[in-house]
Structure formats: C-alpha cells, structure tokens
Length: 194
Image 1 (cartoon, rainbow, N blue to C red):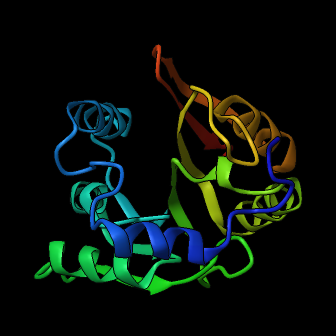
Image 2 (cartoon, rainbow, N blue to C red; image 1 turned 180 degrees about the vertical axis):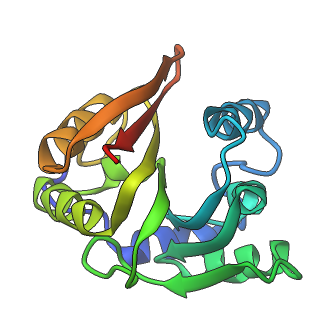
C-alpha cells in the first residue's frame, strides 16, 4: 500500500546519516549514464538562474552548475546538504538551502527547474502545490526537466503517475521539448511558452 502523504524530511535525513551515498550516485554506472542523459537533454543551453529540487549529495548539482549562471540547490536533509556543499566547494555560482519544496520555495524566477527523482515522493496535494509553484517561478521560455525511475516503488507515486499528475497540476502553457524512456527511467523536458 502506497502512503498517501509526502515522505517526510526525516526519512531522507535518516538515509543520508546511515550512508552518505544511499543511492550510489557517486559510483553507480546506471546513475552516471542517467546523469549523462540529463545533461545531454539541456542541449548545451545556458541558463541564467536554475533551481534543483532535491540535490542530495550534489553529484548532479556539480554537473548542472556548468550550465547555469546561478544555481539554487535545495534539499530536506542537512547531511545531504553538507556533502553537496563539500562537493561543490569553490563553485561560487551555486547556493544551497534546506527547504521542503513545494511547501517552501525560493523567491524569484528561474529559467531551469530540475526535478530529478523527487516528484514521486510527494502526495497528490503536494504535486498540486508544486504545479502552482512552477507556474509562478518558471520564466517564459524556461525549461522544466523531470527525470524519474519507472520501476516499482513504495513511494506515494510511481514515476509515470508523478509526471502525469504534475503535468495536470501546471496551468502555464508548455510544450514537450524532449521525451526519453529507457527500461528503468523516463526523462521529460518541458518548455514554457515564451
């Protein structure tokens, strides 16, 4: 039975306290290949201001930073954020905040919002709130990049449900700029109308 509530911050803090790399972001060939595809989906585009929700220990953050003038990275786990800060030390364009998105969201507009492996942790109500946050924060012509595992989970959503529900929750006009599906994950890049 799937939970009907978003997974709480202490779930993630417990994971990162027990193991600084619980999903093997640093060492997994699968994760590295997925990150390669995630960066390739940006197609060399340079973003003025990007938001990464759920930065974990900063492995992907470090790579996304090369594509943004400013990158705001959020996570709910203090342990994960400490690792991400250490990994991105010296990258002056990256800032980190402990925040529970979508309940808490940074101010201002972004021309890239990255939701990699996070939306399926959210309840239906939080997905609706995320849609409103994205409507308010994503600049015209900006990109929303989603990457989600599509195998079985015990999270509130499957990867496919998460993407479909978020699409329904966003009211701003978007077009699908890229869609990829492997046997393990899906990648969706949506571009807001200019």
